[in-house]
Length: 98
Image (cartoon, rainbow, N blue to C red; front, top):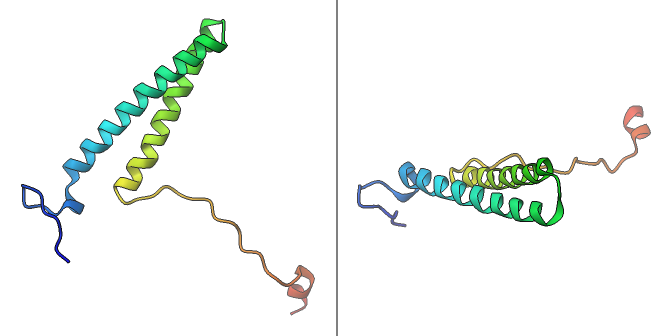
C-alpha cells in the first residue's frame, strides 16, 4: 500500500504542520461559533449582564473542549474513554470461599 506523500516529501500521517494547522483552525472556529451561540442564548434567556457573560464563557468552554477532543484524535492520542467495569458472574461470597 503506497503512502500519500505531500509536496515536502513527508508522508501525510507524519506531517505535523498540516495537523497543527487543522487543529488551530478547528479550535478558532469552534471557539468563535460557540461564543456567539452563548451570547445569543444569553441575550434570549438572561437579564443580568453577569449571567450573560457566564453563558458566553460556557459556550467558549464547550467549543474549546470539543476542539481539544477532536485535536487529540487528530494527533492519534484519543482522550480517556469511560469503560464499564468488568462484573464477575460469581457472587462475592463464592469468591471469598475459594
